[in-house]
Every structure is written in structure tokens, then in C-alpha cells.
Image 1 (cartoon, rainbow, N blue to C red):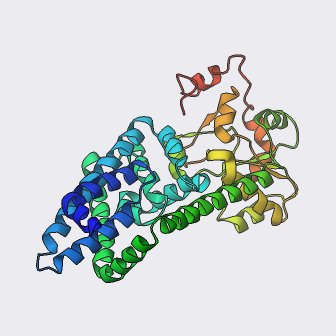
Image 2 (image 1 turned 180 degrees about the vertical axis):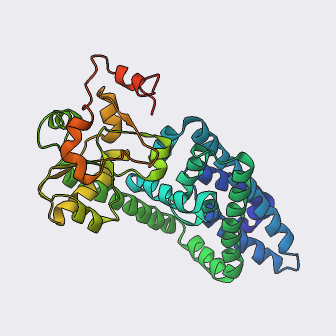
Image 3 (image 1 turned 90 degrees about the vertical axis):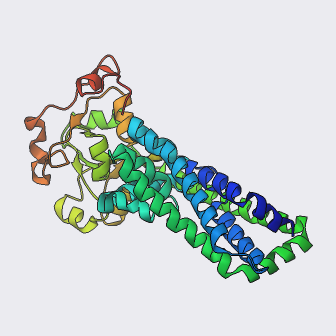
Amino acid sequence: MLLHELVDRFGPAIVFVNVMGAALGLPVPAMPTLIVVGASIQVMSLGGSSVWLPLLGVLGMAVVGGVLGDLVWFQGGRRYGDRTLKTICKLSLSRDTCVKKTERFFGRWGVRVLLVAKFIPGLSLVSVPLAGAMGVRLRTFVAHDGVGVALWAAVGLSLGVTFAAELELLFALISRLGRQAVLVVAVALAAYVAYRWWRRRMLMATLEKARISVDELYALMKNEPLPTIFDIRSPEKRMLDPFIIPGSVSADERELQKIIESYDTTRKIVIYCSCPNEVSAAWMAKTLRTAGFKDVVPLTGGLDAWRLAGYEVSSVTEFGESGVAPEELGEMAAMCPWPVKSSVGSASLQEAGFPHGDRA
């Protein structure tokens, strides 16, 4: 069969290219390729040849390709930090939540998350540059990432070996159908992508109805009563970007009951994050409104928009937040002055420790 001949001659190279492409974020079928190659090796071994040596060779090429591809994003995270995370997250269909979920995984498990990252969609693509941004040593990264890629590739090859007979029948059926089989697969894939795009558009249309701009927030901060401002970024994100909108307090959408008990439901609440399109902030605003809060809105553009508008930021305290308790909100105006908008957009950023004004 032509497929088996191709695997016999170019199997390791095909796996290397696919796994490295997947690590770089390209839409290549790395896991299906591993399964097919594993099945083909098993079928060819029925003629009397050994199956282990070819499998080990393919596994080795998968590890090399995966680690090399991941090293690109690891070095990007180490050099550019948060900007690399925002760039790579745009490659995901679930880019509005993938960064935050990965930050939480990394905060709990550290570099060990790389051992299982390949098995969880979206996690691998973000955990690699996050490891670089968090200052993980190169040797430690290569060791953990190499083991993680090896485990993932071994599972794919094992599935192919185990179900080689069934896959052989499937390939025979596909060869009979010819172009019809390819068309069915293409239509199914296009339908899935279209559904994800449509669901995202509907979500964004709903969330766009209730937001507040940074200029509107700044105006509110000069009047009484002062708004409550929630920073819902993860602790890991605040470590990478240790600045906040002055007067904001850290909050976790998973601790809804604690928030309900601690804050006045009639006070205006503004929520911000640094996620794409502020979807995390919008979801939390919707949840709080459902729980009985009267006036909760996400901040359009989040912390990045606040910076770009020229407003000053405050540094995070050693406790990882602004250190302002809920009961102190009424005295906040006396405790510290609200930021004054600079006549030059980047001046306030330079004073806050951003020498170039546009660097996050």
C-alpha cells in the first residue's frame, strides 16, 4: 500500500515536521499523524520485522521536533514576556480564556505542568511561553518538556499500534470513497470552525451591550461615591505585570460568595483584566449581576487601554494586590490621590516604571 511505503521511507521525517509544526502553533494534524504512523509500523511488522526499533526512532524524532518547536515560544516568553502570551493566545479558538486557565495551572503545578500540557488543548500552546516568562531555567524546561512530548507521542503511537487492524479497514474504505471521503472531512471541519466563530460572535455581541470606557471610569473616580474596581488577573499575571489601576483590589470570579458577602450590591463595580476582548471581565460582570449586584460593568480594553490613554498606574504591593480592604473604599480619596491624566500619553507610564511608555 502506498501509505505504508511512505511511512517506511519518510515516517520519522513526517512525524518530525508535524510535531514541530504543532508546537509552533500551526494547524497540522500531529496526533493523527502519530496514530497513522504507529498503525503503519505495526502492519509492516506483521511480515516478520521488529516493531520496536522503528517506533523508538519515530518517538525520538517526535521529541526532537516538539522540543525544538517549543523552544521558539519559550525564548519568546523569556524575552518578551506578557506580549508573547497575548500573541500566541490569538492562535487559539478559545483565546479569551486560554491564558488565564494556563496561568492558574502553572501557578499550582509550576514547570511540572509541561509533563501533561500536550494532552490538554490550549494548555500546551500557552504554558511554554509562560514558562519562559516566569524565568524557568533552560535545562529544567528542556527536561520537563522533553518528557511531556515523549509521553504524548508515545500515547499516539501506541493507539496506532493497538488499533492497526481497524485503521487498516478505515483506510481501505477511504480509498474506495476517494474524493467523497475528503469532502466529508473538509465539510465537518469547516462546520466546526464556523460554529466556534458564530458562538464567539454571539458572545461578543451580548457582552458589548454593557461596558465602560477608561475615560468614563476616570471621571467616576473623581466623584462620590467612588466605584469599586476589581482586578481579576491571576496572581501569575500580576507577577509578570506588577501594576494596577490605582485603588483596585484583586478578586477571583471563583470566589463569588466571598465577594457577595464583602461588597455592597448597590455600589458601582468596574472589572478589568488583561485578557483579549475583556471576556473574563465581562463574564464576571454578568455573573455578579445575576447574583444581585445592580451596576457591574467590564472596562473596555482593560489595563492596557488604561495605560494607552495616558493614565497612571500603581505598583502592586508585596501581598500581590493594592492592599485596599473593602471597608476602606469610602476613605480612599483621602488615603491617596486619584491619577491625573498626563498631557503626554506616555509620561505617566514612564513615571510608573515603563521607560518606553508602550511596554507592558
